Length: 322
Image (cartoon, rainbow, N blue to C red; front, side, top):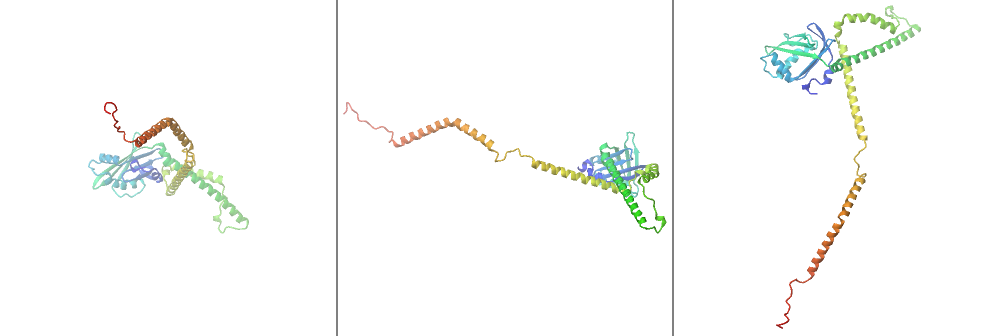
């Protein structure tokens, strides 16, 4: 995919969701900025918004918002990236201390991000007009990775539970052989999976629900897990594509060649020979007649060559003058 059509799908997918707060709204964002194009995604877990822009549209919007701006896109786009990227990545510090960003919700469900900064000593304004993203994009960029992360964490919990059960069996064996703890405070109860899960839900679930606004945050561990899940999915997708291509090549090589080889061309060659034979049979009388005429012509010409000159001899007059 070229830059003019937005970020390459794999590139944007590998970017983790980052927690940001804009105008008091807790959001998760991911973004891609090229040389003269960008693609941003935002979600508050109620809706997902996006905007894709390329050079021509960026130039048009910049002139609408900044009447005195006459510079080409490349001249001011780098400044836009430097100002807005920290705002969309949760970074506290900004290159431009005067930069301000705000969020407003529109009646139709869209959201606008308004950015004000300073470029070459003059105010520079920019707006992101984000519309609800299609369901397919939400599934690819958010739902599928989150479900994979959830499953991965579940497997991790199951392995840890199994490890705790094994450790309890090991400690019990030590006790049966007479081993004792040197400090009583290190003693723990035997791990019971069902009891632990019930206790965990009772204690943790109310805490998570009461902190729902802050639950959007992707910490560094979750961001790393997101990257790992997406990278593995891309690797698996490439491998499946390569295997499919290899299978197609093998099938193509195993398919019988419908074009008869030289050794099997006897049918065609036989038919050709029969046609040539029939043509020769049809043309045989004419050929023989032409050959006969040619022979006669040769015979006549040879007889003429053997005879003396065709000039008639003078005969003696017999009669009155003898």
